[in-house]
Image 1 (tube, rainbow, N blue to C red):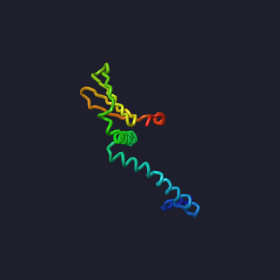
Image 2: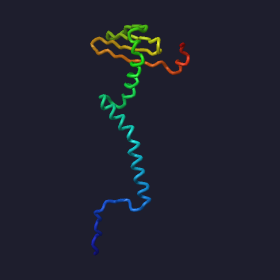
Image 3: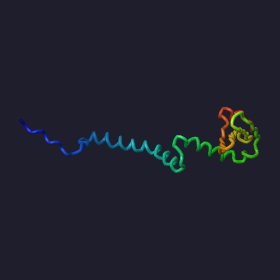
Amino acid sequence: MGEPEAVSPDKPAPKTTLQYLILYPTLILSLLGAIPTAMKELKAWQQGVASSKLPFLEEQQALWTRNLGCAGTGSTWEFDTAFDHTTVAITFCRKTGDILIRYLVQGEPDEYRWMRLPESLTKHKEP
């Protein structure tokens, strides 16, 4: 009987120029394509939030900056709901058309959220 062939300890490596031309550009493009995702994850980690919530938080930050002067001066309506001592307050900003919604629940921290005026309505807004 013959002896089994010895397994080569060498790792597989590209052996032709064509293999090099395919391997390295593919590797570089893959790494470059991952940069935006890595930057988004890093930004979410720095802010201490899940990366899926980052666009919502960035939009809220932009709306708070845009409507900073409206929060206390706009027209406000308050509604008491029929359950759990909850009050919903809605403030309309005349300058931008955006709406601030506040959920006031007894025994819970208050929640504030801005809602942007839809783009389809901004064309019809009076100056």
